[in-house]
Length: 114
Image (cartoon, rainbow, N blue to C red):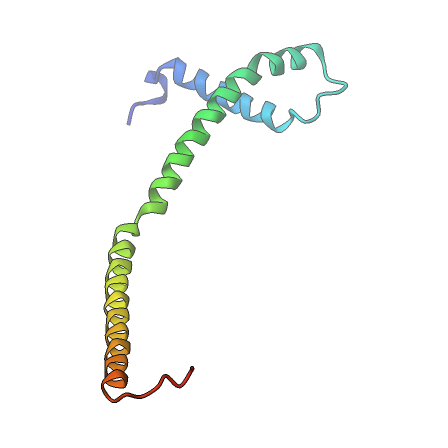
C-alpha cells in the first residue's frame, strides 16, 4: 500500500468534491432563503448532476434488463416442449373425434345432438 504522503493530491481533491456534491444534493430541496454562493453552486452543478444521473439510469436499465433475461432461454425451451406435448394431445383428441364420426356413419347412428 502506498503511504499517505505519496498519494496524489488529486485523489483527495476528487473525494472531497464528491462528498461536497453529495451534501449539496441532500440539501437541494431547501433552496429558499439560501445564500448567494449556495444558489450559484446549485445552479452550476445541476446540469452535471443530471448528466451523471441519466448515465447511471441508463446503465441501471441495461443491467436490470440483462439480468431479467437470465433464465429466459431455459423457460423458452420448457414452454416449447409443453406446446409440442399439447399439440400432440390435441391431434390425438381430433383423431378420436374423427374415429367416433366414422363409427357413427358406419353403424348408421344418428348424431345425439341433432
